[in-house]
Length: 289
Length: 263
Image 1 (tube, chains in turn blue, green):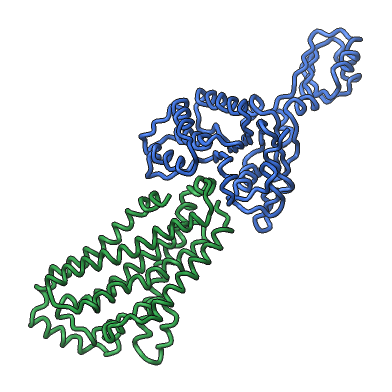
Image 2: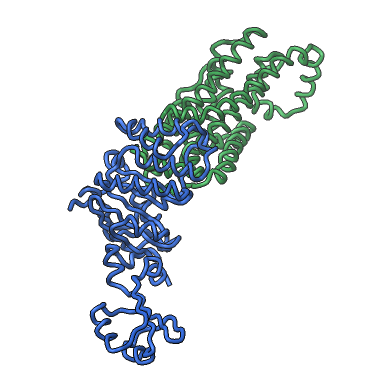
């Protein structure tokens, strides 16, 4: 599959203070990559390095086999960016800012009209009069209207109401169908798990885990809840870490595969057996504890 | 992009130009009433008290303030040079930095446009406004002076364009300083202070031949109002140094801005 964005050993230091360290990410065509981490983990620093707003200390950023140069107009034309906080010229109207944006690209008026209709944007309003949510919608339109190959979204749904969030996710899925590659930075794990193919966890400027959502949740722990009169024997037999205990019912953290588990439990009388996939939220807590 | 830049800087241009126009309008309207033979005689008496060096510093030894044109050549020019100096300095400090201060750089910086083009557009707009302000004031003065008194047209023309010789280098110096900053709050004091210091150094350099060397440390010596009045010539060296300084500082700003961390 064609690689769209390849980041290798990206490092950013602010003097002696570490921003990010050896961040390596690869995004193939059509991927939606969830970039997960709490505030201050290094998500925005990574994104700002990609966008050329700050200078990297070392490492390479390759866009379609070409070293990314923040002054390369042709590359910039193929990237759409939505910052976490949308700041636009307050004295302009939405129409003026869209016209201004359009002047940098070729023939993007049709897509603009589609997005304005879809996101229900009032173009006559002044930027300074827009609510946070409406400003975000303008930002989304600006990031998408030139139909970029690579879309970089930093906390894209903050400020959007649930209905608009759904519309936005629908737009993203349509973009994915068209082959747009998306880097989706967020700490809202539920939306990342529902739309991303692959996720990377970043902590203190370092990527600590990267895989597909399927693998990340499969290869890790599950929660196992068992209710049985033989619970004491089961506890001794399974030797699993107990996280919750209530009379004859115990909740374990399980790292056995299902076949081994069922074989072991077949000797006992089981009143209740519940195996829960560990959620992304739980994984998040696990990694960031 | 150029159109947007012109539009976003228009408001401050109108305000600063209006300040100058209002000052001159008031002077032209009240001057005929306050400058009579009697008041002139008492003014002359008062001026005799001042040291000749001080009168020289404000061109008052070579031009009489008994006409509006005489006032323009002394105090009037001081206002013009200071106000256009302030405007140019503020423009230099703010024109690039405002994008960072207002955080709009996160939008502008990601558009398909080279950083050098961003600087070029802002420099074009700023220089156009500095020249326009000088020209508008020049035309305004010409009209009012034509009505009220006789004056030397060549001398007037040369004096009218001197603000450009200090305005553009001041713009360049402040533009360069701004490439080291991230907030406009810090640069306002620097740009205003710089104009005051340069002006003060220039006045000091004209007070005595002992400190004449100071003229090499101030932009204001590039506006040779005294020489123009005395020789009816602006001096090639002043134009050359003004252009050279402007080019150097604007060029250094390009280099700095291309490497600058924008957020």
